[in-house]
Image 1 (cartoon, one colour):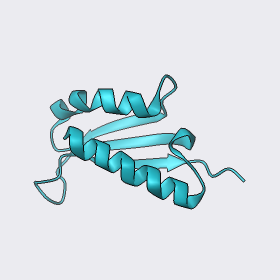
Image 2 (tube, helix red, strand yellow):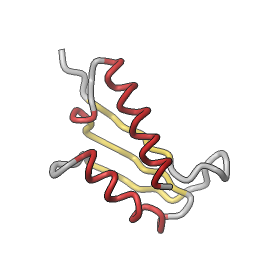
Image 3 (tube, rainbow, N blue to C red):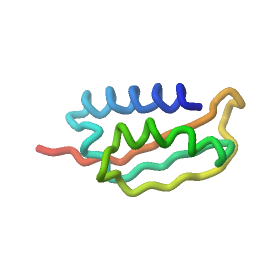
Image 4 (spheres, rainbow, N blue to C red):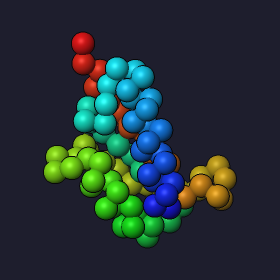
Length: 81
C-alpha cells in the first residue's frame, strides 16, 4: 500500500503540473482503501507530501475494482491564473 500510495501521488503530481497546478494547490483529498488499517502506514508519505498545512481529507474504507489495488487517491486542486 505504501508503494501504491507513492505511485498515486506521483501520477497526481504529474497530472496537476500538466494542468497548470501543483500538489501545493490541493485543497481536498479523498483516500479510498479496502482496509482502513492500511491508512496509518501511508501517513509518513502523505505528511511528507502535504506538509504542515494539509488539505481537507476523507478516508473511505471500500471495495476497489481490483483486489490488487490497495489505495485510490482523488484530489481537488486550485488552478491559479
